[in-house]
Length: 176
Image: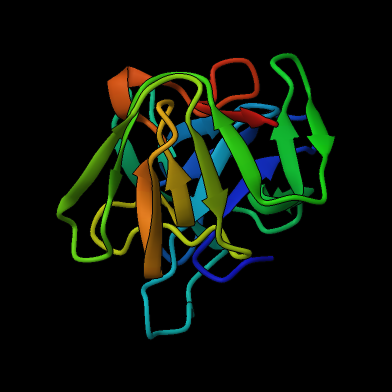
């Protein structure tokens, strides 16, 4: 599993998400089948609590920190891409932008708008943003007009821009 990266719930089951604590007490949400979420562990620190920390979109469409049991089938976001109806295994990091979004430099400053039809190249770990967990790391983007930005280190793309949900049918990035 990618450290601090985006993942997909391919367990076929809904996974309860609990408020932070040493044991699961208060349920705050659900990871539905085929939903994407990000590792919630703090950068530069290991996790010592119950379960696995995650960032997920709650029912109010807010990026929320929570805890899940680590005994379920999740896969790295880099290894699968949506074809619009299902997740399919891929061997490329290139994805097509399905809905408009924004690319950012590593320092958080805006790089460019990415219209539908643009392309992004994910990092192998699909690292989430440290300050913006709804961002996914990319090495390069190409606008729909063909302008290419190659990042020194990496840049980021907002996966939830425009109110998009991070599920197989509504995910912003698709299979090339």
